[in-house]
Amino acid sequence: MSQMREGLQFPQDEQQRVSTSRTGQQIVSEALALVDHKSSQAVIKEKNWRKKYPHYLRTMLEHSIRVSENSIKIAEHGLKKAHQQFEFYRHGQKFCLKDFMQVPHIQPLYSITIQGQSTEAPEWYIPYQGQKLQGEALVAQVEQWQQQGIIEPSHAAALKAVQAHPEWLDLSARTLVLFGAGSEAGPLTWLSKWKANIIAIDLPNERVWARILKTIQAGNATLIAPASENFMASAELSKCLGVNLLTQTPEIAQWLATRPERLDLAAIAYLDGEKHVRVAMAMDAIMHYVSTQKPDSSLMFMCTPTDIYAVPKQVMEKAQQKLKQRSTLEKLVAQGVSGLTIRHLLKSHTHKAIRADNGQVYSIADGLVIEQGPNYALAKRLQQWRALVAKAQGQHVCINIAPSTTTQSVIKNPLLKAAFAGAHLFDVEAFAPETTNAIMAAMWVHDLQNPHALAQPNASLEHPLALMMDGANHGGLWNSAYLVRSALPFSAIYGLVKAKFSFKG
Image: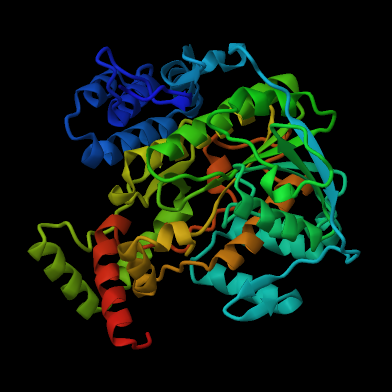
């Protein structure tokens, strides 16, 4: 007997089978339909989606670059198809996700408010390689990252602006909603020091909530936490708090939409495999619903550098320069390795110039890692699409590329852990979680508090995709001389040997 489906699920076919690949193909095909009918049909017919999906994502991006309007068309149609495809189950009844607020028995959520105990003033620093970078030391490190091509100039400028405006760190006038509040790469630790009003959404897990409560109590922020049941004041809070994004999607949406505060909604929850797509869809459904009810809400997303992006002409020129500046020995080694592996390893990261309808020249930085799979790529695509559509509709949208980070969810994969250990061979830097947390929390503050940030509703963009180009911390992947997925195995081998023999370098 098959298990009863509950909450947000991938769709089933007539034989009650689930294919995440088929669903992804249908969404991408629909996204392409209005701009490239031939490619749209090719997506549906593709037999090896797991290996070939990067080709279609690149095709989609090229269309988005050339015609600015296409980027919005693709995003709108992709999101519409996704909300039509995904299903939501409640007590045996099936609904399209687009109708998730029509499900029966939407139960009210209860709230508890907890005030942090600290009276310390807000401060910011960057923990980096055992140092606590502040003031001139922080600025110097930011400039060094920029010179090394680890971060973009706009990212450096944003971090310097936060350093120069400590008053921005006082978030007492803002209410920030964290979907996946306990995320290892999330900003909770910093927000708890910045007087923020934090609405924390995470699973009803005692260990997770014990950590969240400890963080809040040590800071100066205010926590607003949801619970499915009313409980006695004497109850142990860590056992009572939390909600499930996948099964209580309408409850969370209704609870947030009826709150009196202006909300800043951050989609930072992560789950492994196909659940990552489902939780991305849950966050998207909630954010979209809350935004329709409360149009002054802002949205926040963190992109991964291991994706494919439109980049400015300057990035293309830097990458081409790095390719030319390789030593003769490195060129020979790369040619030899590439030849022996039939061009699968150490393949040059070539950048093709693409002229857009705004008269500017852009290129594509391809950081896709096939091993992460099409589900991961789809989840991140959904977030980019929502950001593009919301920004085009005049909403406040904060979306920045965060660097590759050595979180437990990443390094539990031994090959990825080894690849990070060898990343410096290709002038790529992977950041420790505490460094990424400090940097990306500051970027969110910048986008919320700086009246001149491109994230602001009234800020105009030279191209819709500039929203993702701005403020990028790609860890050096955009400027790499080699295609990331072709260098990853080489980097991993080096990292494994390094760990085996415990040598430095």
